[in-house]
Image (cartoon, rainbow, N blue to C red; front, side, top):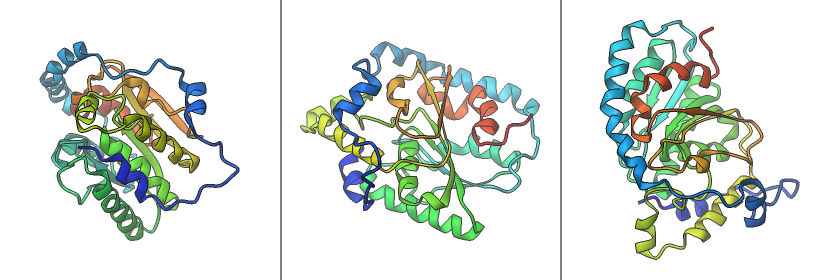
Length: 262
């Protein structure tokens, strides 16, 4: 399960009084009341994931392999309920265009944010120290959430964040796993408010957020960041479960990473 509360308690950041105070009123001003968890009917689209993999396999040898990464370091963060191997296709392609990619050290993403976030911070600090400079982060779903929240803590060590179908607001409130939290008696509104307070310490590096209106796991509206000062949103057609094996995503990666092929 995703324990967002532990993540929020973990933060030791002291926010500045010059930042916008994030609360429910500010949230309503920026988002209105249109966000809902994904419709169950969207789950049908996820059966197309094998087809996405076949399309990518058929076009793999024709993908542009220009060396744009030039040895830049990228940390890969998998989604909830998956292993680092789920990022394998993305890793293989980024390596082929000159990036130096690394799986995170946490192994299986259990969803225990309070446990995972310190490990992500350690990975970032270690890789940043080894490369003697800031690194880039690529996270899928909860992995993207973790990338963002870790970056808030070590801003000087992160130069760019790319997220794939990652909820940036609401915690689990606007995801397909919300019923699980309801059964546990979790106050998701309280988690949402606590998550908002994190935005009082804004992420300053560029963020590229890929989202899909076909996402059956995370509400696409919850992937839209209306708070951070330097964020770009790109709508894709892939479903949530196919984002890591999608030709569309692969072809967008160089641009999203800040190194377009053209």
